Image 1 (cartoon, rainbow, N blue to C red):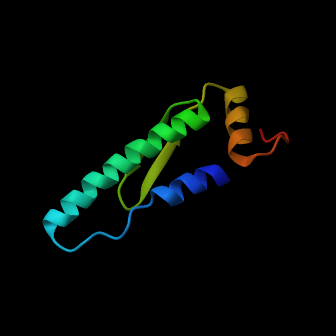
Image 2 (cartoon, rainbow, N blue to C red):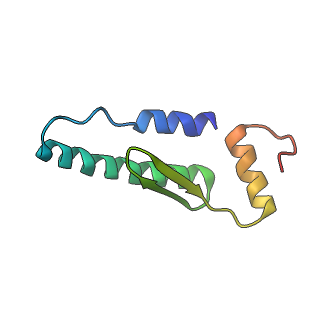
Length: 84
């Protein structure tokens, strides 16, 4: 979880500039950053990850079964205790 939080914290864009052209440029940058973050999470977790939304959004992490969910939970929490 801490590594995911760090990745997200690094990827949070600065506040948008005034004006519609500046906002469009900022939106394009946010989309590129979200796509990069999605690739990094997929690589780190070794599974499909989807990021959607804007100011408020959603991160969806796919898993194949109970064992895969356990693996992901262990990776994200750093704990080897029986989480599932």
